[in-house]
Length: 246
Image (cartoon, rainbow, N blue to C red):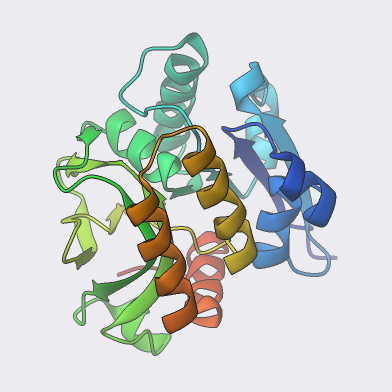
């Protein structure tokens, strides 16, 4: 009998009340996008110091590193512990998919540089441009103009040495990268639904992290554009579950 695939979600943020009430938490949001019948998915609340034990890592086929309210260039204890874990997963050639903060912290762990985005906040539906030369992207019929929900004010300044930049946008030079065959980062949020972002925009505005004009522009983009959720689902599942990116 074929062994069941097992994945871990490394949750780097506390669940918002809205996401808990509507979706059961961000863990369920990710499993809804990436999970398939017959798989086992486990949750590690990394922001609370929960990490997989060294002896348990072998049991996993891959990990997903989520977004966060924290800075990937910060030195909180849990962030440094996560950096060490990611380096260990790299040495073991484990599949790792990093999303937003996860994309940035993965880059940092592998030798890249991250920090505040030169163009400030990117919030709303953004068009990114995947590389047409990548075989997996072309085999999955990923379009050259791909829409995704974004919500970040940090970015990857420099990808890790020997990493391949898979996509860019007008605002961000490194929207996606891969490192070897086993690690990939995505700056945007393929897991987000529009209502999750609207709730997040309202919270950012309420706490004065963004201006009213930014909130209005972000909400307008949600009305005008539709994220390519199915394309992102194909891409993320294909990478995480064993298909080559070469």
